[in-house]
Image (cartoon, rainbow, N blue to C red; front, side, top):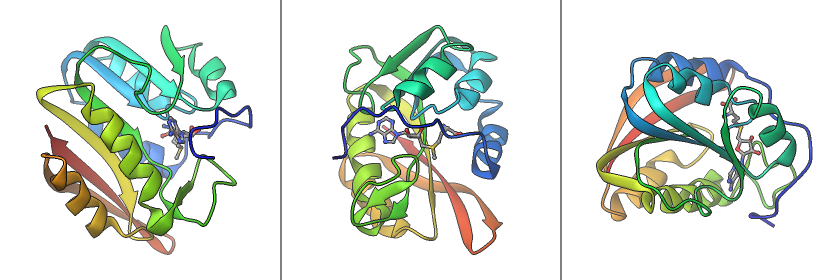
Length: 177
Ligand SMILES: C[S@@+](CC[C@H](N)C(=O)[O-])C[C@H]1O[C@@H](n2cnc3c(N)ncnc32)[C@H](O)[C@@H]1O
């Protein structure tokens, strides 16, 4: 079940994490949210230029790990438990196409879209007007459809960086609210 809170091992920083981290290191603002924080690596990068950083994850072990570096960690689905507005929301999505969620760190359900789109909808509820969401998807997912779905929520969407790794291309997307 997609929203079930889990206690499996956390996602260790990987090539996708570093690609994402390099892109966001110059982002600035008052407050930022990292959805699906894993180890808290990306949230920690945001701490350099934001006054307040919140991190969420459905995985309780991730939240315990991330809490070593981020004060405000919440174990919840996407941004569903939050009631403040952010300048920036980021998410290194679980984007692999799958029939079910066996590994919540990577499984994105149908076409690798279903989990990402739910996360984007949740993020939209906590973004300031003209706030920005940056998320990572892949050529393994139906990313073009995901971009269209994101636009249908009222976001202005563009691909801002790509990186080839093994048999896929990582795709970073900016969506302005
Ligand atoms: C690809 S990992 C990225 C981890 C970390 N942000 C990084 O870049 O190394 C995806 C993370 O999203 C979390 N996750 C999956 N579905 C989620 C959801 N609906 N709400 C919040 N977190 C979720 C997973 O537990 C996992 O930690």
